[in-house]
Length: 585
Image (cartoon, rainbow, N blue to C red; front, side, top):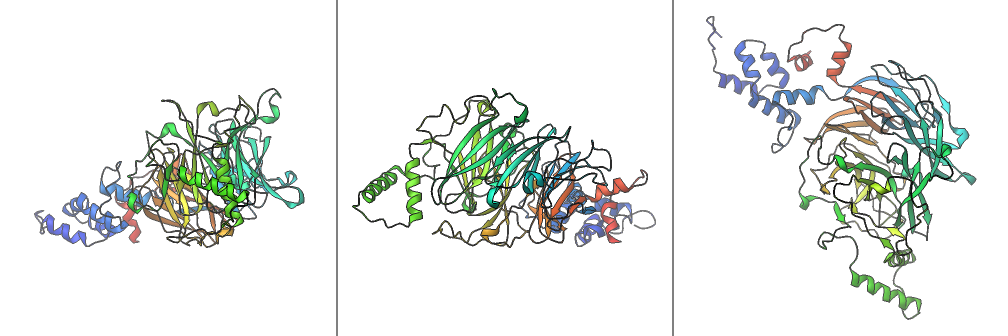
C-alpha cells in the first residue's frame, strides 16, 4: 500500500502471486498488510492449496463437516497424532496387540514376554494392569507409567495376543496361546475383573487365532475346531458366560451359537461383532465405489434373488455330482479328481440338505453381525463370513449343546460372504460399526488355486479395503502405503484401528500409518525399529494414538495441537496462523 493506504496491487494480482506460494509462505505474507491478510484467507486460494499440498483428487469434495478450506487444511495438518511423546519399554519381548477401554482412561497390551501387569485404580501418571500373560492396563495421561507385573506361565500360556474391554469397562477379555499335552498349542481366553483383578474364568479357544470377542457385557464368543477329514472340518462358535465359576450348576454358562462347515483346509478365525443398530447414524458417510473396478465380490447367501447369489453351485451341477459319486462308489467310473478334491466334493454333497438357512430378523429387532475370516479354496484366509446374530441368540439361556436342532440342520449357513481374492491380515470396525476395514495382500490377477495346501503368492503391498456393512458394498478405492514381506505360511495379523476421521494400521516395514477416511490420503508414517503389530486410537480423543512393535516398545503419539496445549506453561493468545507459519523456522 502507498502512504495513503491505497493498495498498489489489485487483489486479483496478489491472489495470483499467492497461488505460486506454499502454505507457510502465504500465511507469512499475510502479516505484511491488511490487504494481503485478507487475500491470504481467501477460500478459493486455500482450496487450491489444499488439493495441491495433500494431493487429493479434484473430484473429492470437502469433508461434509468442514466449515472452510482453510480450517480443513489446518485440521489435517494439526490434529493428526504424529508427534512421539513417550516410548514405553516395560515389555521384554514383542508387543502384539493394544486395546483401549471405552472410557479412554485405560489401555491393555499383549506381548510374547508372558507377564501380567497389575495396579490399583488409575491415577494421573500411573497405570493399572490385569491378569493375563503380557497383559497390561495403563492409565491415559501425557506421561504413562507402569506399576506392577505378574507372570501367567503357571496357567501354561505361551503368550497373549489379543485383548478387549467389555462395554462398561468392568471386565477384560484376554486371548492367548495355550500349551497343551505333548507341546500341542491351542488357544485360551481369560476373563479378568477390573475391580479386583481376579481371574473369573478360562475358556478354550481353537484355533488360537479365533481371538474371541464380547457379544454382550457378560458373554463372550469363543471357537472350537473339529476335524472331519484331511482338509475338511467344522468350526463351532460358542457363547460363554463370563462368570462361569460362580454360576449355579443349574444355569447354562455355555451355549453353541453356530456350526460352520470348512472346506479345503480353511477355518474360522478372527471373530468380531458389529452392532447393526448404529448403521443409520454413521459418524462419516462414505460414498460407494465403482462395482466394475472392485476386485472383491460380496455374496448375499440369504437372498431370494437368484441374480444376487453368485456363490453356490446350481442345482443341476449338484445332481450331476451326486450321480458321478454314486458311479464311483459302485465301481462303474474312475475318479478324475485328486483325493483332496474328491474329499471336498463329497463334503459339499453331504452338506446339501443338512445346512440350516439364514434366519431373518423381525422388523425393528436389534440384531448384530458376527464377522470372521474364512475361505473356501485354501487354508489362507481369503474370505470374510458374516452371520447375523438375532436377539434370542444373545444369551446362554435355552437349549444347550445344540438341543432342539434337527438332524437335517447340522451346519449353519452364512448370510453374506466377501471374497477378497487375497490373504487377509487384519480387520477393524469404524466407531459407528457401519464400515469394515480390511488389510489384505492380493493374489495375482487371474490366480487359480489348484491345491488347497499351496495358495497363490501374495503381494508385498498391503491393500486397506473398506466395506459398507449396511449396503454390503465396497466403498471408495483401497488405501495403500504400508507393506508386508512374510510368505503365506508365515503370515501374521497386523491390527488396524479406526477413529471418527482417521484409520491407522501397522506394517512390516517398521512404520505405522495414518490415513484420512474421507480423502483417502496417507497423512503420517510413525517410525519403529521393527514390525509394527498393532495401533489403537483413544476412543475419546482421536488425537492420541498408541503403536506396538516387535522392538518390544509401545509408543504414544499425540497431535501437534494437543502438544501445544499440554506443554503451554500458561494460557496465552496465539494468532490464528501460527500453527503453520512456525514451520518455517
